[in-house]
Length: 201
Image 1 (tube, rainbow, N blue to C red):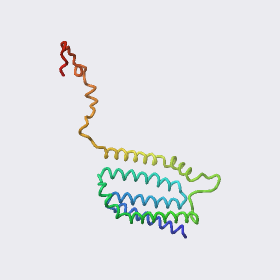
Image 2: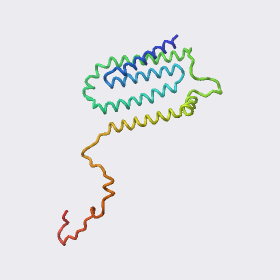
Image 3: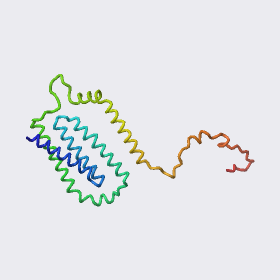
């Protein structure tokens, strides 16, 4: 009974936070709702016994969203003074979300101890663990999809670096072709100044 209740709670919160991620006008709020959705999806993975996927979702995706948040702040030139001035009115909402996450963690632990779920692992001695089975499936059947996802992430990283790179007009860029075409006669000037006089530049 408690396992079904926790499942529907996590599912409803995942859907609601996904809708709020799309519907929020402020990109910072969208990122925070997306982090909330990731935490609830990790709770769903814990319920089916896929603890590796749950921790992977929290560690990798929430960390990636934090990097995305940094890129959004850098690209939008957010005024930090105005953010600090209006942060006090968001404390009740923050404490409410923290309380909801705490209640979800307690319910997930109670549902895990209560049992009654068909978990995605086997206790037989000959069967591999869910982490080993996931790795074997990922690097055999879905190898090309895994490599394609890596290429997509690489392109996204390069695109983010290009978008955040700013050109400085005060710096003189290096012209390699002009340096290669330069002749010794253009770079060296031989002079024979008389005694007691300096070299005229």
